[in-house]
Amino acid sequence: MINAETKILAETERYAVWSSYEKGVDTVLYHLELGNVTYHFFPEEWEELVKLILAAVR
Image 1: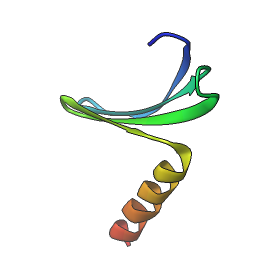
Image 2: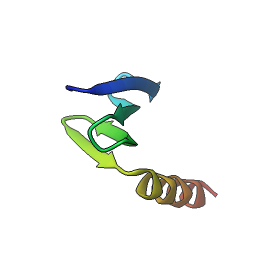
Image 3: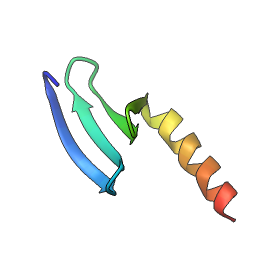
Image 4: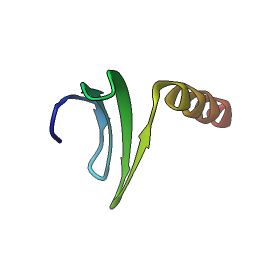
């Protein structure tokens, strides 16, 4: 990734969650890797996804 500072937030053998600061758009993006598929989220989308997952766990 060009112009990005990355940080792994969590990972397992097959899955990973990481964030990157994108200088070009001046924001943090969150990335969810599920096998061969990677989803990219802006902060407000990421927060909504986290709320959804936490609700499902309850």
